[in-house]
Amino acid sequence: MTTNRRGFLLRSAGATLAATAVSRAALAGLPELASHDSAETAPPLQPAGGPHYNPVVTLNGWTLPWRMNGGVKEFHLVAEPVVREMAPGFTAQLWGYNGQSPGPTIEVVEGDRVRLFVTNRLPERTSMHWHGQRLPNGMDGVTGLTQPGIEPGKTFVYEFVARRAGTFMYHPHADEMVQMAMGMMGFWVTHPRTPHPAIAAVDRDYVFLLNAYDVTPGASVPRTSTMTDFNLWSWNSRVFPGIAPLVARQHERVRIRVGNLSMTNHPIHLHGHEMQVTGTDGGPTPPASRWPEVTVDIAVGQMRQMEFVADAEGDWALHCHKAHHTMNAMGHDLPNLIGVDQGGLADRIRKLVPGYMAMGGTGMGEMTEMQMPGPPNTAPMMGGDGPYGSLEMGGMFSVVKVRRDQAPGDYRDPGWYKPPAGSTATEWTGEPPPAASHATHISPHDVTVHANKPSAGGMHMEH
Ligand SMILES: [Cu+2]
Image 1 (cartoon, rainbow, N blue to C red):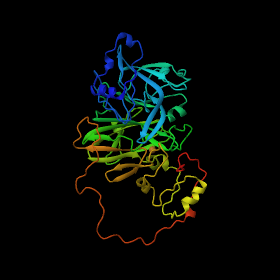
Image 2 (image 1 turned 90 degrees about the horizontal axis):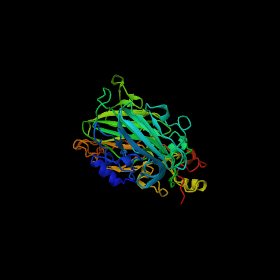
Image 3 (image 1 turned 120 degrees about the vertical axis):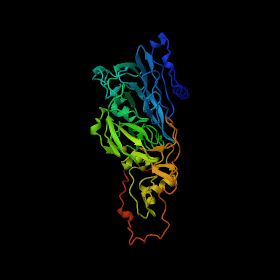
Image 4 (image 1 turned 60 degrees about the vertical axis):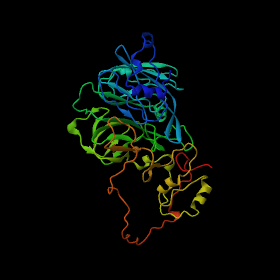
């Protein structure tokens, strides 16, 4: 049985799970299959019964309901093809769990005995690895090493005690290159059972995974053999402007937990505040070892939990600092034409590369305003309309929205920040600066154009 999104929202809003009252016969079967078909951020799933914890919020995702069965928390994950809206106007055909990529977040308490049913609805075998967990070797989910693969149509059962509080993830250990490039991954949070000296109570606790895809503009299925040259850099399989904001009430303590299952590192940069790394997938960092950062680099296969006090009101950018990772599909493999008189140049290149469009002669910002057309089902190269025009961003970018009047526990987008009068950068209207003494002129012959590049990420468009 599939729980639709409306049903899920109603259940989580009621802070109770229907799963607590199931018949004995039902408990002998698989847990009810919960599925989620929306890319909106679901409200946090409040724990039914004790112990209490402040649940996490999965950006553009949701948390998997469970049922109690004889003192064991039971979850049901289904590996299956999914359709993911990665940004408005762009939908990808991925593989994921329970209707989405990434799969739902699993949230438990230290000491919980957990039973996880994993059903395979993919055309090839898979397995599930519980990244970072202390567990019996045979539950570690490495195909061929600790278990046979889960063949299509089959269900495996994993069971272990969540021994260590912290930040974890799950992903297949089977045909990894294909299955992770197709979006198979999910988040796992184990809350401490009793207060832990190195794990602070926080007011907001956000989680997301860093992932990347290579989808040819106009297509919808990722190329899985790509090693480094991805063209969609995403958080929870979403690209800006499709990534939800992280909302906080002023002075709240905020934790952001991030895991990296892409193929390169991502320096995650927060504006206007200082963060501390309070934990990794190896556990909480000792408080005496912490130092302030405004950019935290997250290497491949690593997780970092960062914390800060949201004491400055405003709309603060949170993004990967690799500039190519805040661009969407069509921004790659372009010649730099800044300062170039392009008269006739594009026509000449078009003879070599049908459908070629040039980067703008003053940079690429101008192109976001032109709303350069791409093939159908292509994320805009960069964009996102803010209160002052285009943000000229794509990919791994979002906004931390800190508001004095945001109610505790309210995760709704408060809209754009309205700064106090006189506190915003404005145009100088006094005497203009002297004109530049000389201007650089670049001739078209100085520009390198790779006419033989395949069209994977470039702006080679068919008309
Ligand atoms: Cu990055």
